[in-house]
Length: 337
Image 1 (tube, rainbow, N blue to C red):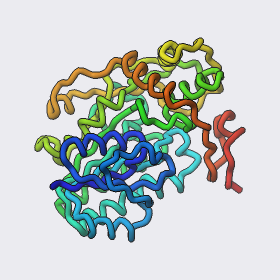
Image 2 (cartoon, rainbow, N blue to C red):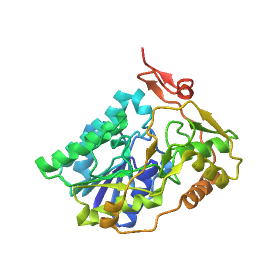
Image 3 (tube, one colour):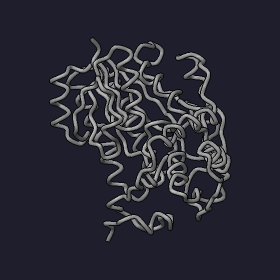
Image 4 (cartoon, rainbow, N blue to C red):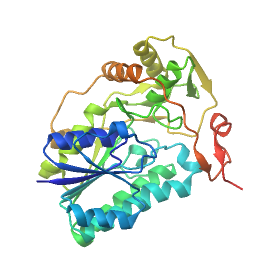
C-alpha cells in the first residue's frame, strides 16, 4: 500500500488533498500543529499526529515508523501580505520547516515530494503567468516559496529526489478558515457578512485575481504521482478567468443573501493583477471543466451558513510594525521594539 504524509492536513487545502488520497487507496498520515487548521477537518480514516514541521526529530521518527511512499507538503502560513511584517516567522515556517521535510525525504528515500508553492513567486507585471517566466517575488512569502522550489531542484540533481511543484492561486471553498483576517478574501467577506458587517476592501477594489474553487485543485495535487509527465515539473494550477475584488464582493453577497455593503480601506502594497496560464497542467493532467466563480461561491456559502461565523484571530508577534495597513495595525499585537 502507498503511504502518504500530508503536512497541514487539518488545514483547508491539506484536508481536501488527504480525502482524495484516501479515496485513491493510500494510507494517509497527517502532521499538523493545529495553528491554522481544525480537528473537524481531519478525514476519519487518516492517522493524525499533532506536531510541527519545525520539529525535525518528530519528522525523522515519523519517516522511520511509516516508511512513506510520498510526501505532500501543504503546511504553510500563507498570509502573503502579512509576510512583510513577520519575516522570521515566515522563513521559519515556510522555508526551514520545508527543509526539514526535504532532509527526511533524502535520509529515508521516497518516490515523490509534492509541494504546494504559490503564484507569489512571479511578482508583478507578468500576466498571464507562465511557468517559464523568471520568478521575481515581491514579498517574503513568495521568496520563501521560491527558495523551497529551488531546494527541491538541487536536491533532485544532487540526490535524485523526484518532486512535483504546484503553484495554486486564490483557492477558496468548504473547510476554509473564515476567521483569518489576514488571508483568503472570500472567507473574510463571508465572515463579515455573517456578523452584519460591511465587506472591507483594500484600495478601490479594481485589483484582479482568478479565484479558484478547491475542487479544481485538490484532486489534481493528490493524483499527480500517477502521471509520469508530472515528475520534476512545476505547474500553475487554478481558475482561468480573473475577476475584480469588487465583482467578487457582489457575487459573495448574493450567495450569502446579504446586501452588498463595502467599506474601502487605504490601499496596501500588493500585486494589482495576478492570474495564470494553465496550458502546461492541461497538457499533462487533461482538460477538465472548471468550477465557475458563481457555482464555487455558492457551494462555499452553503457550507459557511451551515457552520456559522468564526472569531477573527489576531496575529501575535509582529516583528516589523512600520508601514502596516492601518486596519491591521489597530488590532495586531507587536513584539517589535
